[in-house]
Image (cartoon, rainbow, N blue to C red):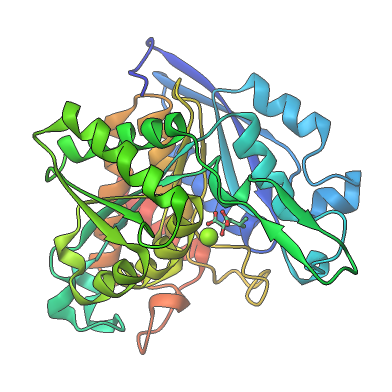
Length: 360
Ligand code: IPM
Ligand code: MG
């Protein structure tokens, strides 16, 4: 992860708002980034098309021009992609293909998804609030391998299909390395997820993580089968520190864990390559049911922008300031519709303005 390279720092950021609520939450993140910009931190935004609307405009979910923009910038900020218009599973082009292609092209193998329970939201959470005390988890999801990218066979009209969950040791090791390192800076506990009682690929996963553990003896390592992990996440969430998982298991468990934060709209993510290049996006999707109404929760997107400042630009001070401002407005009672439950909700823009005001 990079440290702040020079001062003043000038950075170019590709902005891919995407579909549905993507553009709405993106506007919030940009406004917050502009607020923390200064003579010492100059950000230039380069908007480009990706996802469903890119299929409509360019016939390609990841147009060549967008790819070119992404190649020339320091980091990518992404909203969300997809929607009912493009959701026919047999369509040859799907918005998600653009997302997966970006992850693969830039080798963004390390997907960081922090999940914490906000004390100010715990009364409204679907889980008992005593279970949520102290919940602070970092998911490290392997993002460029596994069943998402394994060999597959499908026929549009055939009666069989297959996908392959395939990992090489080196792919497991590099993701595990990020996870062990992260645990070192936190509570020194790593939980590795697999299905080693059934899957050969999971036995390779477990062996590889064990092997790397020799270099990280100060970190306590536990292995948990994915089905048990799905239960333990809800019965003892505060026990977890860093959770390492492959692409598919990490996808599923991180959505489950969003319940701990109060809403899927709360969660940010960073997807990083070995050299610190990264793409930053909220964990939530394009939420077509509420798109265009100005009520989406921008927290996940705003916190993703904070992660961009931290991991791609080395701007820890500004990143922490944004995170504190979000904490502050939540404590003060600001609630978008998804986390309102009884309270009167405010709009995406009002929430964003509150964050900006808190930053001042
Ligand atoms: C995520 C999403 C994506 C994934 C989809 C949109 C392809 O669910 O980022 O978690 O499965 O990785
Ligand atoms: Mg997902």
